Image (cartoon, rainbow, N blue to C red; front, side, top):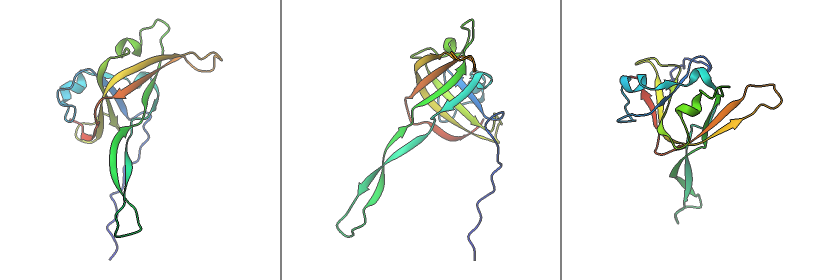
Length: 162
């Protein structure tokens, strides 16, 4: 008998569907409420690019004397350097006012959109590390802000959207 096939995914592209929110306060980031999400700010309309937002585990060698094979065990959990690239505004009224350096809050990534009960989200407790202004000197792209974030705890992953 053959193995059971994995459930088919509903394929999508992040562009036009995934939402990214900045939420200043969440009582329990592993289970945010609908009210807390609604109190956040949807960054998606001004978001040009995203980088990082992944968790990895260092692998540790765990040899023993009974075999020549060296097994591995999971070690420290780390997060990749993470940032969002946002469009800059000529008048300075943009993401730098919402998320200045050293601001503490949460980046909430709602994969496939903000669909109550039908989607999953990750919640990243963060501190804003820096807000870098990127000038498009060639004039072939809009000016942007690269906002880097320092994760302050293990993110809540694959949380049901309330």
